[in-house]
Length: 194
Image (cartoon, rainbow, N blue to C red; front, side):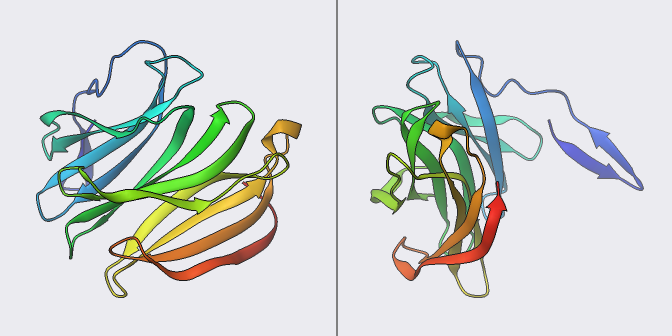
């Protein structure tokens, strides 16, 4: 739903059904496109079964009305989930990242992403940000764009979901507006974090 300031009060718009497909839609992420004045809503989606989550997106105007139909973001085999979206208003591009695992419960999980134009058409190939293994998963990705540096910062943690360990170090990687690595993987914080 939209939330609009009305003086000192907040006014809530009506609840919007972004997606009503079968099974589970979860972990939505919203980013505002200040150039085209619309919101990009992205979510993980199990309409093809709960062993094959995919990522979809859709635009909404500032009144909460849909702009066009659904867009497929990541629909490869296996599971894509935990989506995060950032918008670059200088080049009118999105960076969208997600977890990708062989199974949605135990992984192993890697972090992948891509650069998308203002209409959510992917530019170039999918980017592998961090590759998981049988003993290390990479989870809880997040991305944001800095207008000052014109770069995307991607963050995530390491853990081992298959042994019920959801805690680990926090990592980062910096990309330019085209999705090329500017600063390779570095540790932001050592410890036990999700």
